[in-house]
Length: 294
Image (cartoon, rainbow, N blue to C red; front, side, top):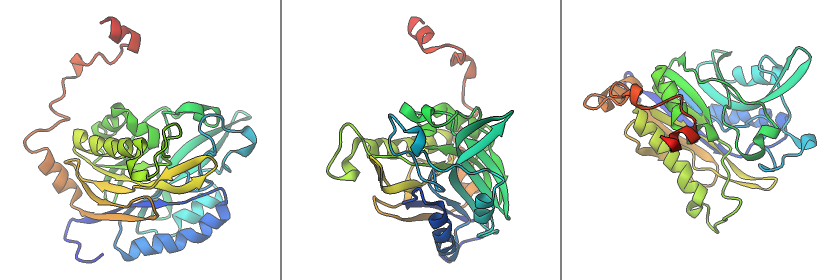
């Protein structure tokens, strides 16, 4: 992708199949990253569970058949970080942590640049049986990159407006959303684009971008793993909530040019959603039952 203007960057989201075989994934990533580099991509967002794949069953994951776990400072992460030091790359792992003799696993997103890890996010919201496989993360925090200040979310995190809003309030102008988002397991459609989950997947991406007036770069797994069929639909969404680049069910790269600070500033010039908030009216400490009573 040529012709990127001064101040512009290229944001890219990958739709692709990443399974259990970590060595195979590490062998195919160099060509994928090099292809994105040739298209001028500055921020590349790979799917959730890039290394090791996602769960085979969201409801009842088997303890003896979980994705292989790696450590943030391990050789696998270092190998990805070394692929293209000039590019910021976000990718997902099953993270292994041992503290006080206790091993925990997290569904984790990492951002690397210049051969180093520059951002870490552990998935906070764990749907269905995912809590049987992973411990929850406990925070959302943005971090600085050459494309601007970035925050990361992992699939179900984006269902909750508070997640993206927290990152926007922390200065994020780009949300990298790493997904392993499957089609509906209870109400299947013959065509993925007509699936109920396909509609929600796009809706959340666009809503989180528009309500926070930020860019959303949303990747996803494709194909089938265990009992799950993944949607694809990687996309780049601008601060007005418009999809400006998208893949469909098959693998591919959605890439778009962006003047990140300029476009965010223009979106907020008349109505600045973050500044126009009225926090005292939102009852942040109420539980759902208390909200019903209120």
